[in-house]
Image (cartoon, rainbow, N blue to C red; front, side, top):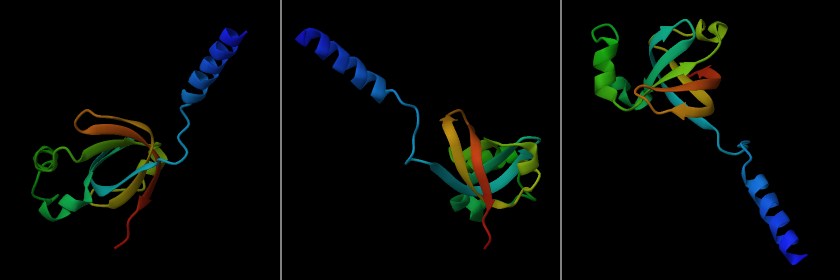
Length: 115
């Protein structure tokens, strides 16, 4: 009997520990939009803004300067249409981040940063 209680307890602990719901750890980033496509924004760290000149530098040059602080953010087209290159934004990430370069993630929300 004790063996069965131990096995049941073990499985309950395992099942409870495998929850994918993360309530307290939202990842948020702030940065500068340097490129956009139909459903994505390419964002680099706002800390690098002083070094970036969107009129004189290519996206590839900027990515070389800010490595690894760049991320493609996917969102619905209606959301992406609200932003242009040069805008500063705050993005709350939904789910995980693909750590390619630039990184890739989906947006839970995108908000403009007004200075």
